[in-house]
Image (cartoon, rainbow, N blue to C red; front, side, top):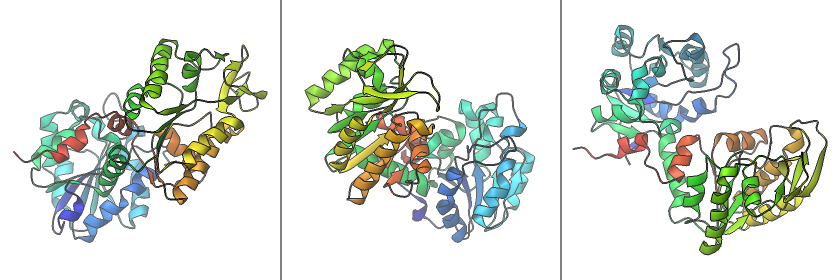
Length: 399
């Protein structure tokens, strides 16, 4: 793995693929700048060497070319504040303006190009489009792990035009190294906490993790598919009927592998999906008709936290309940607290996936776990054992 520490950027123009797909409100104000702040060390290293930076990113999912609400111009002022310097902006990522601004860029300057996805060639992985982007700089740096699972022009194709100058940014390298720490020879016991609404997005992850872990904790809406597979009564709780056989298979497989698969013992139920709904705590396999489980209960928290506190390596992907509502946040918060405590006692903890990251940040624990991944789909595909095009492109040997 070649990283940006392996070269000096003095006098070089670095094309840096970043993931600035940040949320904006109706007034185009950034509501969470985490993805921007995470790449600052990479940008400052390049600038500190005496190089210049040309930033490439997408924002949202524009369908028919340029749309004002998806323009990266809305990020310029905030990025300038984060960097403490002016940020130049090109109204296109290719074409005459981009070429001229890139050619005129001086050492220490930063140029942000317009949304890559304003051109359909980006998502198609078009070689000619990638070549046009590549012509703007001398070195290619990928620091966008969140898009590494996409075989797009800027993430998987551009690297071929820099056979001797394609590098991992600090964020990209950290993501890969920290995930590998969980997957390859982790310190045991290893506990994976998998939550969220549905089993369907986590099937391959669960299947692969059962080969590598000691404890598998299931929470969130997806747990009711497993509870039903055990014959439990789940009322109106979320369930994927077609995946009940898969859940039963995983329960059996965990037993065969000697993996402790933990399901909720009790849960917080409500009659309606509302923060103000009447609620109760019942055994998770005895939910009455018309009621739905929206959080794990206190007995479950005690069981899960005991497993977490006994662990040396912890992976968390997905909340335990509807943590966005204060009435149903307790389970997710208690799990987060246990992970923090285990980390403070020497465990390695990796938190990834949008909702898990949102949860640790909501409760103020983001700085108190070992590593918070910026990857959603990319993290899941890596955990599934799939080859990420964006990572593969950086690792491919020069032919």
